[in-house]
Picture 1: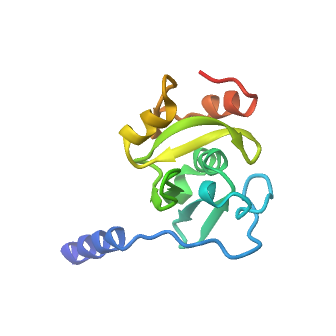
Picture 2: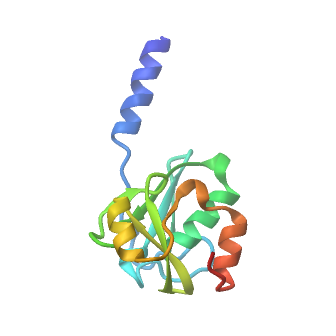
Length: 142
């Protein structure tokens, strides 16, 4: 029985996929249209199987940090390719032109993130804290 449960859990992780937000979907944090800047649209999947969306990585990471116990997956879009990537494995670069000012541009590749950042810093998921996001919201860059 335990082996069967482990197999089912493994399969659910293998087949975990993001879903495109329906037209008119609003950000779970601020209420903006999540499709206004498609390359920044982000999402989480909750334990109950539902999805929550945001117009930006900054807001979906904020939602995650406030609801960790309910979230099973985080998906962001690679800033270069526009493809969905695992938000916990992404590399992030601060940008000034997000939907609500300063935000984060996610990249699947550290090399691509560093190219984009130039002399700027590249962050990993573990670096993104509530304090970090508060500073970003205020326009303060580390």
